[in-house]
Image 1 (cartoon, rainbow, N blue to C red):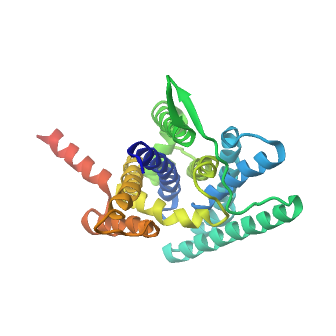
Image 2: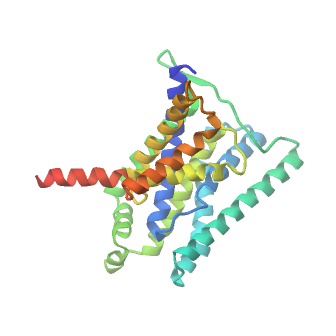
Length: 309
């Protein structure tokens, strides 16, 4: 594979992992329980885009805002009617994790039913789908459309987060709840409302990757489960309770997986590409053993020590 194509695939894949990890982190910082249904929002976003493409011939990237709102709405409903009530009733980590698994199965099963129904109704494939979009010419250079779309999407999300969290009342309230929910209540912050907003954003951000995934990777209702371990690996390696960690972890895991399997598939090792899924597992275990709080915590610790000196 030419180096340019290899780097294009690596950066596109990493950009999407960062977005997925941001979504997982945003849901984790509310109830402090990892959301195993997070990956399914990728499939939800992808099928919103594919349905719009089949029925109305709308380009997948034009449906990104719709994918955000649909995925965010499903995530919000999960929080309001399942996880918030369970948390208020004193359910512990184990029970909440089982509830997350149950929610994941419900969403994935609903998507499987939906794809079967649409396929039989429209006589079109709704499984293992891919919409090729080609390249875009900018300044005389041809750039992969998924790469450009994922970069613009990621940059938009990061800049929006920076502006909202630092310069708006909503952002200040979100930060207060994230850092110390009890203290936030003392100062009059509606903690439940902030948690609900966090879950909406978490589902929406992950769902936005769906239309891009649809143009880059063969997609079916199980794609969320396929990516779930990678999302967790990215979040854990970077630091699951840190937005900076989601960015660091997403790039670290994404680049390691794509470039790592390329190197390992060359002689004399000759490892088959199908084993690339092992790389996120290895990185996640290594991170838990060496730096359980992730790379971001290490960087913050180094920065803190320098300031003290």
